[in-house]
Image (tube, rainbow, N blue to C red; front, side, top):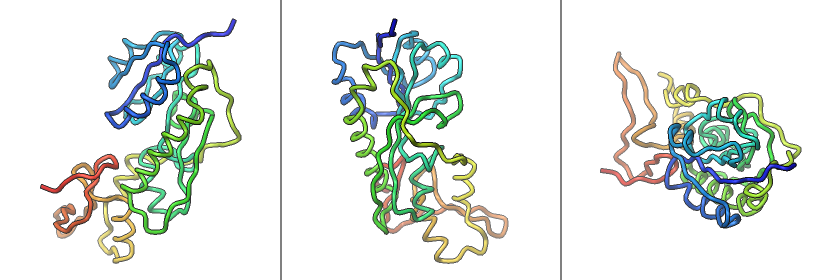
Length: 234
């Protein structure tokens, strides 16, 4: 007997997930809905026949919670399969790639390794900056939700497509290394990293000189970013 989805549980990182929740919940208006933002809330919300959908959450869902589910959980990844792991837009910009995208995949205990069920790809303009690419990525996520959303909130399991993850995942350690400029950095490499990383309270280029650590706090009119969102300067 096929298992029916008895509840939608969204694990999210903030208000940026609101449009995603609105699109998907509208496709199953009679299905109860709960939203979690941390592990405690997630543990309280989940039942064995819940459909767990995650987007923008830094929380890695423990294996025991995934194992208790009778149906797969799905994650909406803000990057293409070529960029599993953290901050996919940063690494795509640093690599000066001409294409980007977003991915929906079945969750597994190891991050960004589960079977892929949908991918949306789009062209990237040559001089696009991080905020603009993150905005395009978010619009791509909404497009994916509209495209397969009905299946995502009504079918116990979605069929995998012919897509595979890249072997190398981007990590926080790798991102931090990208933020640290070498002592002999040239103007081209500086601009390449600045273009990809942006500038914000939680991330900025830095350099160690003469035993001191210098962190970029640009007083020009460049955008400051936090989680892909533009911030006003103080």
